[in-house]
Amino acid sequence: MTARCRAWLSERLSTDNILMMSSCTQALEASIQLAGLCPGEEVIIPSFSHPSAANAVLLAKGTVVFTEVEPVHLTLDPLSLERHITSRTRAVIVVHYGGISCDMDSIMAIARRHDLVVIEDCAQSFLSQYKQQMTGTIGHFGCFSFHGTKDVVAGEGGALLVNDDRFVQTARTYHQKGTNRNAFENGTVNYYEWVSAGSSCSPGELSMALLLAQLETSEEILNRHCQLFDRYFRHFSDLPGNPMTSRLLGCSSPRPGCSGNGHLFYLLLQQAEDAENLISFLSVRHIDARNHFVPLHESLFGQQFIRQENQFSTELNIGQRLVRLPVFSDMTDSEQSYVIDTVDQFLCQSNGAQEHKP
Ligand SMILES: Cc1ncc(COP(=O)(O)O)c(C=O)c1O
Image (cartoon, rainbow, N blue to C red; front, side, top):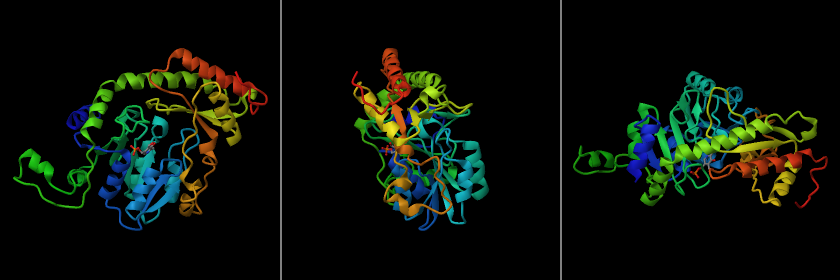
């Protein structure tokens, strides 16, 4: 099953250098190890992201450096990236937030200028494209998640794309507990042995059986997500600036020339209180809406990594101001209409903080 998932991904992403992993977290950790991060070297990550990228750096005894996200797509801001680079910077981990790709041309140009390793966190961007390229195939490494909260799921599962030939052989060894088991399986050696540091990365066959069935219907799943995203976008992108809905600051939006995967659709409210009120307004009407990441620098643990150069104006309370609306593949058009109408009702109320039972 693992081999069949690998073959499916290999064909779809047009690469041979793909390793099935037990999670995206593990793929991120492997990327940092394979990049050869030395203790004290710096890795830049957006503060508005999942802790797994930061943990991968800390576990390798590297230094986490936060950077800002751009206000429109909430993906790593290339201008901010450049501001945080020092002589100790080794790598950058970019996150294609909500399935919308980062500005990869700018990021790759900066990375080339400063000789940085680029790791793409594609946990949310399976089959999204940046221009004509699949996310995960552009940087040196691409890390995918098939966790139960993603669009295509294995319960727990992930994949690592190794896009730079320099890292391919070490990645295979690392993946096989630091042994040359691959060579043994190919019949090129008679026994396998310990050849370097490595880990146990392979997912379980049962998870991969589930994933294979999901991969085979993934176009269908993602097409539906994209339809739902497009309809939400057509509706809500017109509202910011409208005095009737002044509490709405913005919403998810596609990056021009790129195609997302409809992983999520969010509304961005003026105040954390507005978002909280919207979530409870929807909840009593049986609509499950959620906030998202608490920016890493706002956590007690993350505060130690804040630097003087950090600005964090877009990130201020973003986790609490953002509301994700339901997106799931068997959501019907009438369910979506109900969500849209209910959100409109909230936004148009002059005092939306008041709770009215339906
Ligand atoms: C952006 C991002 N990175 C990494 C992860 C971790 O993925 P996994 O659960 O497969 O380790 C997640 C999971 O939510 C995520 O959203």
